[in-house]
Length: 251
Image 1 (spheres, rainbow, N blue to C red):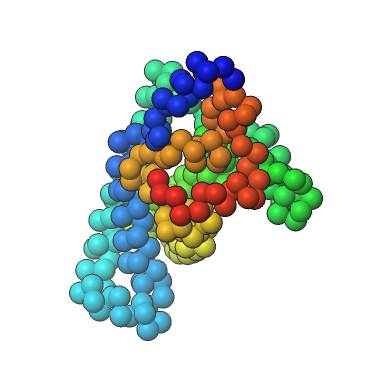
Image 2 (image 1 turned 60 degrees about the vertical axis):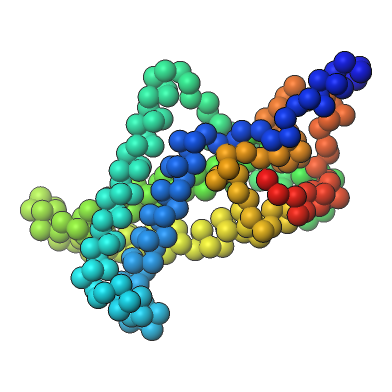
């Protein structure tokens, strides 16, 4: 690398933009609605348990709990409609980058990650803007959210639904709604919180979704394929010792 190129690279900003203001606001709205829906919904589903009864009582009773749950359900529906509208508009304007669309590489990365975890590969897979885990979460939220929304409105308006559909649809919607909500809550607690809070190199938390920025060094180490213009010597091998170099480094 020449001295001129080296000087240019030294002038690169320490942080890079990863999420726009719109994306950050959208995530905050989703985060708030999800927490409220999970707490009020699971409390109703497990009202016989001590914690469920405690939540309902402190929210003012079952009637108020249902009102809050339905109100935030409408807000969640509007946020999903906004997201789809944004995607459709971006697609029409040809400004949509298919960075969240799963590819064959993602399936190879799953195998590669397993091989690396079991010591069968020297290096983990290298990722672009989003890895297979983030894509899994995104599409899980999309399809799971659609199940939640449709089944939720069936439960909200059972008399209207049973005018054109058999009553068994309401019972099926109740089962779908409850099980999908439980699965979504477990996914967030077990998977997402680890990935953005407790993951080595991230703890005590990944705040990029709030600030919109990540460090240049972290981008190079975690998303090297997002910057194909990087010189070979600037792209780390992403080995275990290098991954540990991020420990305690804030965004």
